Length: 411
Image (cartoon, rainbow, N blue to C red; front, side, top):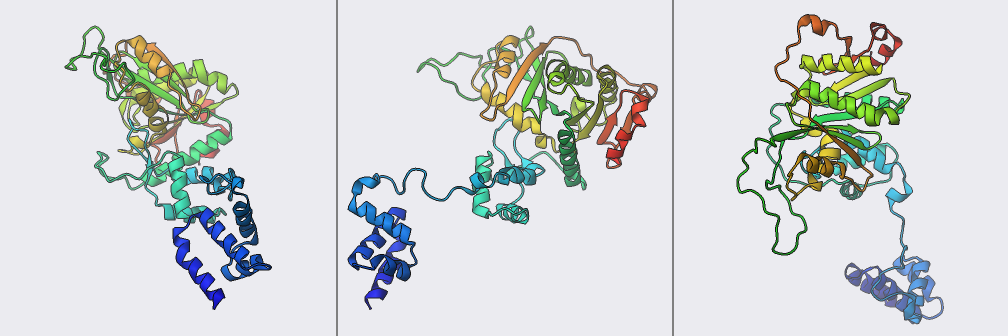
C-alpha cells in the first residue's frame, strides 16, 4: 500500500514540478525509505539512480546548486544541432527553394510545414521532430507570419522546377569553385533631407529635422543602387547610379564587381553564374542585357551562365534577403542627404554572419531606348539550356567555347 501511495503522489505532483523539484522529491522519498531506498525509488518510479543521488547531495548540501538554478551550468543533454553537424545545412537545403519574404524586411518564412520538413530530415538520417525544426527555423531567421496579399499573380506551371534547376546550378558551380552571384536593382531612393522610415538614437527631444514633403530636389535627384551578391563568399557590391537603370548600367555594375572583388576571390575562374529576376534591366527578354554580357564575356574570357527566376517571383532572389534587407536596416531613420552618405551607409553594412559590402558611386550616363537589331543579337554567342532556354542560357566569349565540352553539363 505504501509503495503505491509514493507512486500516486509522484504522478499527481509531477506535472506541477520543475526538474529540480522532481529531483528533490525522489531524493527525499529515497532517504525516508532508509537502506535500499535509492534502488526502491528507482524501481517504483522509474527514475535513474544518478538523478536520485544528485538530489540527495543537494538535500545534504544546499550549496551544491544555486537555488535559482534548475541544473548545473552546462548540464543536460546536448542539443541535437550541436551533435549533428549537418542538420542545419540539410534543413537550409530543403527550404532553399521554398523561402519567401519581403525584400525590405529581414524576416523570412517557408512554404513547407515543420512536420514535412522533419519527415524529410528523418529520411536523410537525422533524429529530429517538428518542434525541433520550428526552433531551428527561428534560429535561421524564419518566423510564423499571417497570410498577406502579394502582387505575384498567376503561378507558372514550371515555377518549382525552375527553382530546383537554379538550386542545382548554384550547387554545381560552387562545387566546381566557380563564382555565383545574385543581382538586382534596389528600389530608387530620393537624395536629400527626407524622412527615412525607422528610428535611430538621438538626444531626447532632438530628432533630426527633415522635409515635410517628399518632393525631389532637382540638383540631387534619385539614385539607383544595383547590387551584386556573392552567394559563396557572402560579399556584396553596390553601384550607386544616378542616371537610368538600364541593362548597360546593370552589366557595368557586374563588371565593377568582377574587377574590384570577384577576380581576386576567384583567380582561376573560367565561368560565372548569375541568378537574376525575369524582368527589369536584367530581364530575360532584354536584348541589351545579352549584348552587354557578351562584351563582358569577351573582356574577361568567362563563360557567363544566367538563370532567371520565373515571372512574379522576384522576392525569392537571394540578394533581397542577404544584402538589400540588411542595407535597409542599416540606414533606417537616417536621411539620405547626399550621394556620399548613401555610399558610406551601404558600405558600412555588416551582419553577424560576416557579410561585407563595398559600394561606389557611378556617375556615368546610361541613356534609355537603345535598340538592338536582329543582326547585333545574332552576334551574341548564346546557347540555351534544354530546360526553359528563355530563362536559362550561357553566353560564351568565343564561338569555339560554344562547341566545347562545357556544353555537356547543360544537356
